[in-house]
Length: 172
Image 1 (tube, helix red, strand yellow):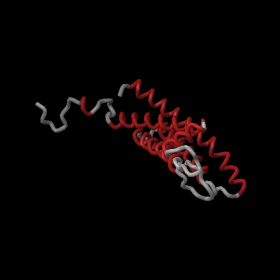
Image 2 (cartoon, helix red, strand yellow; image 1 turned 90 degrees about the vertical axis):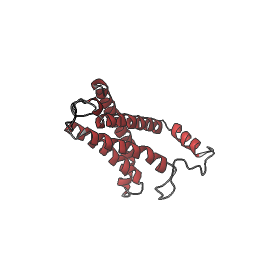
Image 3 (cartoon, helix red, strand yellow; image 1 turned 90 degrees about the horizontal axis):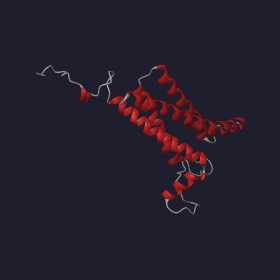
Image 4 (cartoon, helix red, strand yellow; image 1 turned 180 degrees about the vertical axis):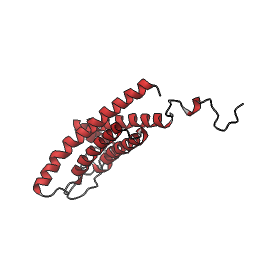
């Protein structure tokens, strides 16, 4: 991967990751604080997950700055972005009582039509949800590109296909 493209993607991934962490802290912290003040912090575990996942994003940024292998950081970022996206699909619906599982596509009590239409309508109904999912999906694509670039490039910047030396010693 070109050095300039790699640097731009790394800066983009950093910015997208920080926006994701900020959104989840913004949503999770006040609600978690209300539950903690009421003495029932585990009534809604999603708020704890929002705060902890935000801290995980910040820890990943710190590990990257500290010098952990980039491919490890990118892979962990990919997993976290997938957790955000799939977590919304499987846990982002209208929960009732103490239920944790409430799929966002659940059409019960809605006149949205199909499950896909319900997902879309829930997504565009809340601007913060829409922004967070667009940022997370974009971060996922950027992190996958960075991971691919990191895995297909040696430390010297060569791709395995561009090497001219033969490690077996049979090159005439």
